[in-house]
Every structure is written in structure tokens, then in C-alpha cells.
Image 1 (tube, rainbow, N blue to C red):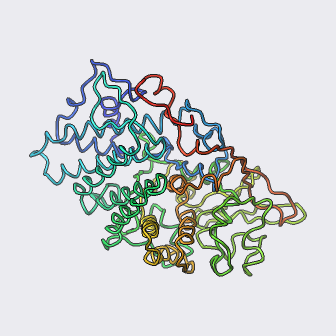
Image 2: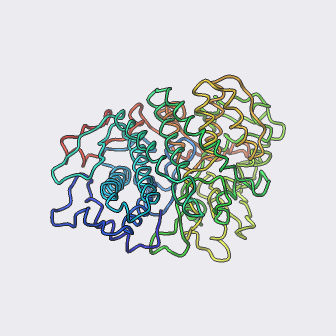
Image 3: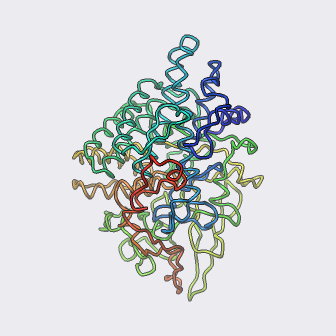
Length: 563
């Protein structure tokens, strides 16, 4: 979470954060960790600063890049993120983004949590017990989340639960050890955290947010490590959320063509939006203290549009009747498809589909996720008319030098009118929402063999979107439906990459040498243009390497397999 008190965070970072390499110890002359905690207020500020630990790989500009690691979207500008090599098969163990942002930053915030948990009990009696437990619960949850990510990215990794001494050089712990720690931490945090958030914009952890984070970790273990008993662990956690009566899907406007898009708007991020369980907080006009984000620039800014969708993702959006009405297989659509060689799955099946008007009569989420490029033409002559967005009082045109689709989801129209300042984003970034919890619950139930119980939760999400209910009694078919629904509902929410890994979907969706194309040009008498080619090797790319610097500096660490 970005905080107004930038000076405090600067000081906190100076005193609490380790050196560039997390295993390098601070000099003996540096202020000790325990001496930092002089008053109860220090604990509160330290917990606030830990929320930055929820950032993934995006750095300080708030842009959620992680889904470029799937087959659905791509990064237009290779210079924009340092982990671009992970998208095309050229990643190396000395990649600086992996080292600095996925490894060092994770362990930096783990170290800060360890220090707080080591020192905070000295304030018992000065801080009300409920508040002290709340601080501990927040720190535990963030620490468990960080270890979840380390387990998901690296597999085996050091498990450090106390502040390191000057001569401590931890070795590599097994994924099983990390998993056991994560589950125990979440359980203890759920006891310590409050039922209701401490603010009115979903900026603080509650026990329900911790339940969802625990369930996400359990679902990963169930799938990636083939531990089916963890489906029940996830289902038990999510049942607490679903049965609490505190959450519901956002349907303020009772309009399937509007509710999904407006869910992410700044005007709807308050306490009355009961879909949101947790958000990263941003404040407009606070760029100097990194309280704003750059999402709207990267998604839809003039000349940027850095994260865009391939045609194969657009093909994932059903027609308004649903795929089942036309006998289209979810399993087939969840696999790699060459969109240059293959027509839309709707062609010749859905009577309302027109390849010259791609966005018409589709799942309403399509035009709430992407701007309609309004492609027209014949005989190879193509124009891109773009879409006029009334709320922003301007038209959004695809750039002429590429054929991909660019995002409307999470773009804040108030940043484009009356002033053009899309870098000054203040709409909060949602970390956990109820739609995700419902789909995870359905998947956990299905994984536990309770397919009939799972189906209604998927259909709740589809109903909000204005899509017809799906029906099946087959466990594997339902899993394919859930995969599809998560891809359509959760793009750019930084869950899908981990979903692909736990589903073991990477070979199926991103086979070696797979080519991904921009919009389908063939209906206009032209040839589709390749946007990217992936040369990912498996199982190598299911995990990333422990950074070379760490291996070089600490002989107790074990290098990652396949790297």
C-alpha cells in the first residue's frame, strides 16, 4: 500500500530493510532492529509499510504485468519490464527483475515482518490487546502471502522466520516445509485478525481476506503438487467467506453491460462495494510519494498501450447465447489455437456472430475489458475506427503500427477528461474480490468430488455478466468451464499465471514455438500479423531460478533444478 507519510517509510526502509542482497547482513554499526521500536506508534507505521509487499513484479508504478506470462496477452514494448525474457524463453538466472523484485523484495518484507513479530509484544499493555493482535495478524498474513509467492515461483527456497544474525546464512528449505509454515501462519492470522476492516476502502486485512489467501495457496498445492486433500482445505476456508453474508457481487447498476466495468472505477471503491475484500490504496496528486499509479497510461495512454491482447484471448469470449448453446467445447478453447489458420469458434455456429464486427453480440465483459477497435475494410484495406468513450469525452484508437486489442478494464476515465493525466491514477487496485472467491470455491468443491454443489457459484458470476447458466454433471468438463470463466473474469488481476501453473496448463496453452497473432485480418482480405512467438521449455519454465548472486554469496543454497 502506498502511504502519505513518505518520510516515515524512507526511514523505515533505511532502518529495517537489508542490503541489496537479502543475505548480506547490515553493518554492526547500523541501528539495530529492536532499537527501532520505541513506541506503540512505531508498530502501526511498520505494519502500514508492509502492505507494499503485495506488489508482484510491477515495481513502483502499480501496473499489473504478471499476466503477460500467459498465452492471453503480450507486452508490446520489450524494454518495459526486465522479466520480458520469461515470456519468450530467454530467461537466465541472473535476470535482475527476478533478483530484485521477486526475490530480494519478498525477503525484504519478510525480514520486516520477522522484526515486527519479534518486537511487538513489548507493547502489550500499552496497545489494546485486540489492536496488538490485529497488527500481528496483518504481519503474519503478509509474510504468509510472500512465502506463498516464493513457493509458487521458486519451489524450494529459504524459510526465514526470525531476524537473521550477522553470521546466519540460511539454506534451502523444501516446498513442503514452506507449505506447512504458510498454512499454520494463515490459521494463526485468522484468529488474530478482525472480522471487519479498519477503513472504509478495503485497505486493511481482515480474517476473510486471510481465508481467501489461504485458499489460493491451498489450491496451488492441490494442483501443482498433486495434493488433492488441499482442495478440502481450500473449500473449508472459502466456505467461511461465502457463508459470512458480508460479500456480494457488485451490481449497483443492475446492468450487465456496465457493472463489471464500473466495479474497478474510483467512484465505486468505498465500503458499499461489497465485492472487494482487499485493495492496494492510491491517492491522486501524490506522485512524489508514489501514491499514484500508471495503469491508465500503460493500458490506454496515447502512443503507449503497452499490454495488449492476442486474438486468441478475444476468441475466449462467448457469444451472448453461451458456447454450450452451439456445441463449442470449453476444453478445446482452453488449448492453444492458431488464430491465423483457424476462424473464430463462433463462425458458422452462432447466428449472431459477424467476423467484421467482432464485439457485437458477445459476452458483455468483452467490451468492458477492451476498447472496441471497430475494424472495418475489404480487399486488404483496413481501418480502425476506435471507440468513443463518453465518460472520458474522447475516442480511443488502436495504434496503427500493431494489430492487438488494448485494455479498458481498470482504466479510469476521469484521468482523460477534463485534464489528460493518465499517470495520476488513484483508483485502487483490487487484490481480492468476491467473484474470485466464488470461482475458487466452485473449483475446490469440484476438486473434492462435489460437482453438483459447485455449479451454482460459477453461474452467479456468469449471471452478473449477463451470460446464460452453464450445466454439466461431469467433473472434468466443469473444471474446463471454471478455467474459462477465470480467464474471462480475472484478466490483469495477477491470478492467472499462478492458475496456469497449478493447472499444469503451460504446455497445453503455450507449446514450444507457439505463434500468437493480432486481430484476425482474413475476413478483410488480408493476412493476420504475428505479435509474439514463445519458445518456452518444460518443465523448466514452471519455476524460475534462484538468482545467481544468491547462489554465489551463500554456499548453503541449492541451485534451482533445470536452470
